[in-house]
Length: 342
Image 1 (cartoon, helix red, strand yellow):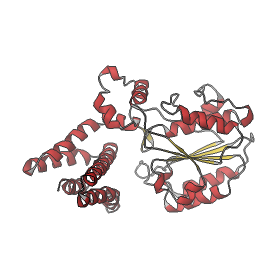
Image 2: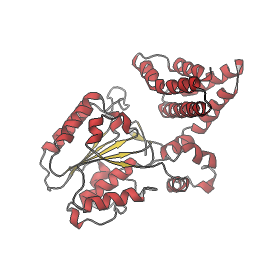
Image 3: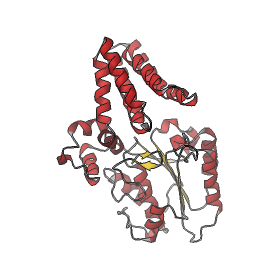
Image 4: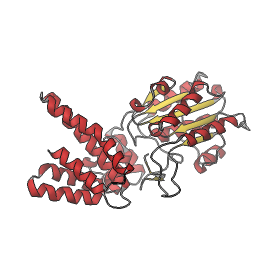
């Protein structure tokens, strides 16, 4: 499940301790069989949209491997981790000497996660592998997600992947594998996960106490979440449903009414400590523009398709510039909305 900085989204369960995984039985069976065969690859690229269970799968597989260090005697299936075993307790507390979770570090000044996984974090992996495992067990690194590696960090990981230590396993998570260095992708075994089906998404939300028959998980939420638990949580617990409605109001209005709707939406998105819903809106905006480009292309409006596609690809760059120069977030949002509605 997606993380809010280094905290977990409200209503979610940390993947290290999550006892449930929905919708990926085939991937679990593949990993269990592949490991038991003794021919397991040293790096597995687990790819798919954000919030569908990639990290939960990675920790379940890590638990399986560390609990059964000899492949030939490992079970043929990945079972639910037993929270009472030493391996599970160590993984849950972050105290395992055989598992390293690489993710964006916290900025000590702001208390928030940095924008990238830095080379200093990757150096931790080098130190991790240089230490002799007291048990002779596997040593596993989960990179979560590798999309956040900056250039130096990516190159440092690549060097380790090129000459992996004995009994080392990398579980490389990616929301958008096309952004990774081709040389990193080429050294990994790809394992693609699909968005959750509506029934599986409903089961996942039910396990979090958001039962569909309880009234909160409407059909609209299941549709808008597009198979992602983290998107559903943002819709339900962070006001995402209201943000989508406000954006639709902007699109459907014109003149002064549209301008007022833009300002109302921008005020909400630019509020202090509203980073989760701001990120949700940017994702929603990108999806809207991608769909607009696709519809324009099918209609033969190539100029419209090109414009929507370019706007979608520019969002990240424009937000990055805004953050780098500490520009007013509200003005940045208004600029984006004005471009989208032209």
